[in-house]
Image (cartoon, rainbow, N blue to C red; front, side, top):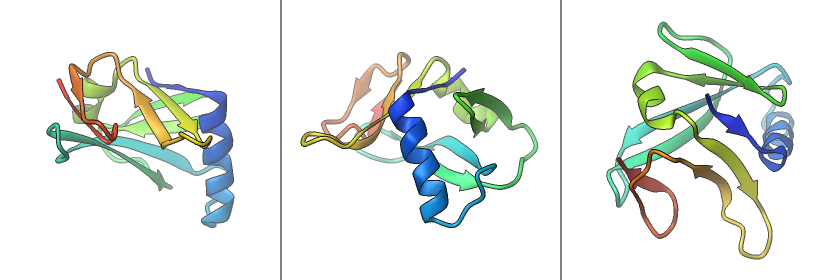
Amino acid sequence: MITVTDSAKTRLSKLKIEEGHTPESNVRVSVKGGGCSGLMYDLSFDESLKDGDEIFEDKGIKLLVDKKSMLYLLGTTLDFSDGLNGKGFQFVNPNATRTCGCGESFSI
């Protein structure tokens, strides 16, 4: 399961409106190869399900995760920070053994 913090929920809800998506739009969370540490997180809005998608809902936010990405994301918390030292969306991933300095990539 993936957990969404209140601040991430608020920001995702605002982005849906700003980008013209419906309030019912899903958030796709995936892991792709790349970045300093080998793997990168990817967030996008998605209106449709794909074969093999896992669906999670937390705080009213529906998250879609493909099976491959699920292996890397179990137990992850999606957070958002926009303070002076905020970095935007952040993934707190208990499976990551190493993350890069910017927090955009990780390895297992």
